[in-house]
Length: 209
Image (cartoon, rainbow, N blue to C red; front, side, top):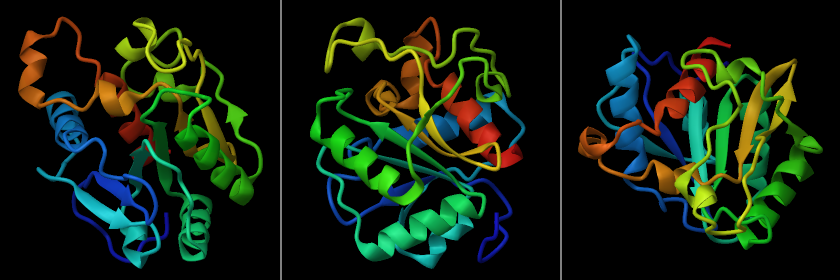
């Protein structure tokens, strides 16, 4: 990806946009940073940053996370920058923090995405993003919110994406990983399985494809 400067290490970036509650999963960056450090040899910064969607600094970060609960209405500057970012090789993860296909985040975020790029496409469950580090044989792992019947009471079996030259440039999820991964890393000591491992795949894919 064309960027303003060469970062010496991976920095987890959260997209700050003018509408909605972009900061709705404040513990998620620390948790995924811990997972990258724990499971990979990637040189990762110990803390994340927030980056405005309409800023040139966006192009410093090969992976950017975007989430929220509220309506998403990008400004014209945010739209232009997001389109440039994705088309120039950036990877944007957009996750519906409501886990609700009838909810206002999903309806407005997908409208904004498809306005810029055309229709989202279903990602096949044998796509390399599910095998580029940890292996997820059945595609995107489910969250407790899906399994417990919260939100739209659906198991979302696939993720959707905007592809640029056969590479995922923007990945869209209704699975609410934002809630699933919004915990302190120390909590992992009490868990049988670390649910953030799929987040590692997202970051490895973004950095290597």
